[in-house]
Image 1 (cartoon, rainbow over the protein chains, first blue to last red):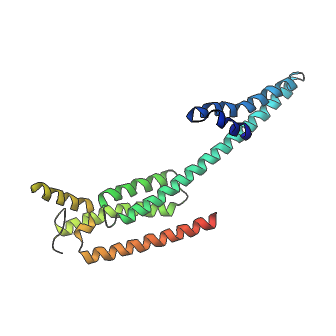
Image 2: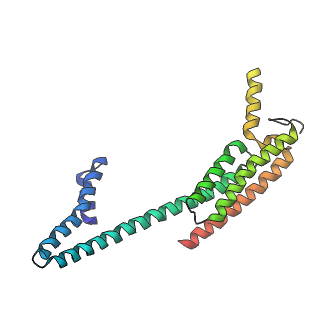
Length: 152
Length: 52
C-alpha cells in the first residue's frame, strides 16, 4: 500500500495527486472484499455472514484506531491550549491586560471543556486570566484614572 | 496635537497595569514573571526530553 502510494507521487505531482492517492488507498480493501466473496459463495449463508461479521469487526477496529489517533491529537491540542492560557495569563498580569486576560480565560475554559490532560495548568491559566482583569480594575480604581499615572 | 494626547491615553489603556504602577514596581513584577516563565519553560523542556 505504501509502495504504490510512494510510486504514485512522481507520476502525479502537486495537489492533483492527493485525490487519486486516496482512491488508490481505498482500493486494496475493496479488492479484499471482492476476493473473499467468491470463496464464501459456495458454502451456506452462515459462513458468509460470519466473514462479513469478521470484516465488520476489522473495519470497526480500524476506525477505532483512527478515532484513537484523533483523540490523541485532540488531547495534545487541549494540552497546548492549557499551556498557552497559563503563559498568556501570566504575561497579562503586567502588560496588555485587556487583551491577554480574555485570551487566557477563553483558552483555559476551552481546554477544560474539551477534557485536557493538564487540568491544573488550565485552571491556573483561567485564574490568571481572571486575575489580569481584576488587577487592572483594582489599579485603575486606586489611580482614579483609566490611563497613565504620571505621579511616578 | 489633541490626536497625539488621545493616542497616548489609548496606549496607556492598552498597556494596562504597567502604565499605572511606578517604574520600580513594574520592573520587579516583570522580573518575577520572567523568572516564573523561564522556570516553567525549563521544566517543560525537561519533561519533553524525558517523554521522548
